[in-house]
Structure formats: structure tokens, C-alpha cells
Amino acid sequence: MTAPLKAIDGSADLPVLMNDLAKRARAAARVLSLAPPEQKNRALEAMERLIRARADAIIAANAEDVAEAKAAGMTSSFLDRLTLTPARVAAMADGIATVRGVADPVGVVTESWQRPNGMTIERVRVPLGVIAVIFESRPNVAADAGVLCLKSGNAVILRGGSDSFRSCRAIHECLVEGLREAGLPDAAITLVPTRDRAAVGLLLSGLNGGVDVIVPRGGKSLVARVEAEARVPVFAHLEGVNHVYVDGAADLEMAKSIVLNAKMRRTGVCGAAETLLIDRASQDKIKPLVEMLIGAGCEVRGDAAVRAADTRVKPASDEDWDTEYLDAIIAAKLVDGVEGAIAHIHAHGSHHTDAIVTDDKGAADKFLNEVDSAIVLHNASTQFADGGEFGFGAEIGIATGKFHARGPVGVEQLTSFKYRIHGTGQTRP
Image 1 (tube, rainbow, N blue to C red):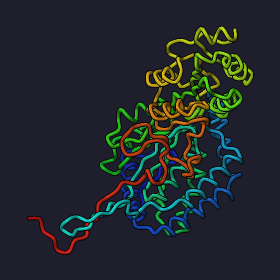
Image 2 (image 1 turned 30 degrees about the vertical axis):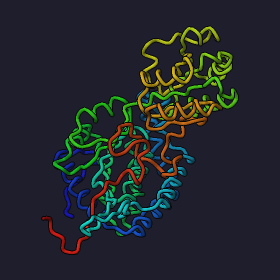
Image 3 (image 1 turned 90 degrees about the vertical axis):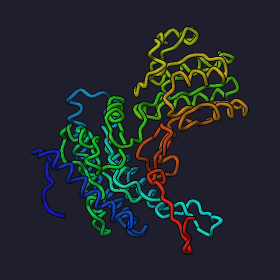
Image 4 (image 1 turned 120 degrees about the vertical axis):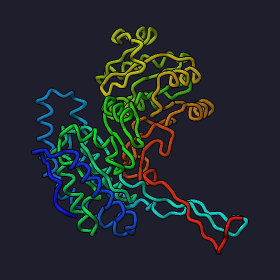
């Protein structure tokens, strides 16, 4: 393709730049849709190798982003999401290796049947086309989204937040070199080369049919804006108001371990628990659970019964039951058994991830069947709401809607289907 493009970041005629990106991505998507699995896997192998080899350069670029964010007074949870460590870069590379090992979904016949007239109809998986991923702070999303889209035969346009601009560029360079090693077009994975916020609005417009799907990864305000303004389909979750319900039949030590991990492993991720529900029939569990959380540095905001168990608990307001803290804060209350837990989650949940801790199979089955969330767990931490933990290698996001994709959006969820019909000269009477 010919020259133009540019920015980084002397900015440009943005509409021209963005439409040019979309045209190149569309051309790359056509190539990818026909690329054999072996070629895509060669690119993924090279990407993994390059990210491991350039870990120091990626971390150095990230350190500049983190320093800038600290100077701007960003919160500790924001800085945690932004920061790349050697372990996190290694995990990024491990995720690419896992994606490489996932079965290629493109061209898979998911169903086949024969009609009375002798025609055979097949439903076949096909890529979605061009996916735009708009994300904030987490630079690892650049790698996750890039490799998932590649494996599923889609081109992707990445628009990272200005806070992670340098980190994303360092990661993107590895991805593009991997594409080149495998003989695939650079535009298969495009990073918007400007911090100009107007680029987001242009992506949301669909760029004159250049974008097929938008995936937002970020805070509530970003996701709300994308869902309000997007002119193309969106895979998204607005927030993760996630619950852990400790049933009367729960083992206390298991409950303590799960609640602590669900809340405090990483407080800034979308799978973190934000509300603790405890069966009113087992009030003896309140005090040890609350003491454990406060001892771990978590602020607890509770109803009257929870406050009575520990004077350090702060009063919960009505807003607390609907809040995604993304911080070391949890709301806690007593409910009337599994029915009460389900009622509370239906009233205040965000259809993301909710867990029950219990040794009562009947209570567990009821919770898993009736809680209308993308991910429901029995005796496990909500922090397993992650595509890597599902065996997907990575995820492009957690979808909480009910159309097309729900839960972690991995390789398979980034495909649609078409029908292939084989006839022997049939015509319709």
C-alpha cells in the first residue's frame, strides 16, 4: 500500500489518518481470513519470542508511562493496572503461547445436515472482519487483543489510552515484527499512532464501514461512552459489581480463603469481588471474615449486623451496594439464605461474575442456575473471571450482554458463521 499514515505524535489530519488505518486493516482482514493456521501460528511464535527477548525494553518504556501517571496523581489501583513487571511480561508471552496452541476456529464446520431435496447445509465459522479495541491503562491488552484477533482471522485496530502510549508502542513493535516474519501484512495489527482523543470518536463512528465490532476495555465512563455513541456492534461490560455469597453450609476456612483472594489478590481487576453476602443463619462467620479483611488492609462497609460484629466496620450507604470500587474496599451485608443472595444480586449486580461458597449441593445448584451473570462460580474465587484461566490463553474482554458473545471473549467468540450449501442442480419450485 502507498505512503500517507503518520502521527506519533505531531498529529495529523485525523479523519484522513483514521480512515487510512481502517482501509489498510480491511485489506489485511481479507488476507487473514484466508491465512492457513500454520502461517498464523508462525507469527504467534515469533511474537512470543520477541516479547520475551525485549522484556527489558518493554519495561523501560512502561516505566516512563508509570512515572508520568504518578506525576499526574493517578490512584494506586490505576498504577497497578498500568505497571508491567518482568512476571507480567512473561505472562503476556505465556498467553501468546497458549493462544498458539488453541484450535484454529476459522473454517470449522459446527453443524451439517441434509435437506429432503438432497442439498447439504453446513454452518462454518468465519472471522468477524475488523475489530477496534479501545482500552485504558492496561498495556497487556495490546498483546492479548492483537494475538486473539490474529488467531481468529481478524484484523484489529488498537487504541490504547494516552497513559500507556509508550508501553503499547513497545509491545506493538514486537507484534508487527512477528507478522512480518510470517509474511502477513503489518496492518493486521494496527496501533493508532496518536494520543489525540478525537481518534476514539472516529472509531466509534465505524469509519465509513471500516470497523465491524468495537471492544472497550476500561473504566465505566469509557464503556458508557462507547455503548452510547458506537455506530457498530459492541462487546462490553459496563462494570464488575461482583459478589461472593457465603452460605450457612460453607466451610469457614474455605470461605476466608476465597473471600480474601476474590477481594484482595488484585483489587483493580474487573473480576474483583465488591460485595460480600453472608447467610443470616450463620452469623458466627461474620466476625472472622471481617477481621480477616480488615487485617489484610481492606476497608469494610457494612449493614447494622456486620457493624455489630466489629466496630471498625463503616456504615454502608445505599450507593455502596451498586459500586465497583476497584480498590481495597468491600460492602458486606447479611441476607436470608441463598434466596436472599440471589435477590440482592439481581437488584444490584452487573451480570459479570458472582460466586457462592457452600457445601450444600442444592444451594449451589440453585445459585448457579438462577444468578443471571456471565460467570457464576461454586467454591472458587471471582478472580478466575479471566480468559487465561478459562484456557483461552487471553481474552479481549468480558462480555456481559447476551448477544453473540458472553463471558471471556476468546478466539472462538471472535468468529461468526456463514452457511455453505452443496447441491446437485436443485432449483426451488
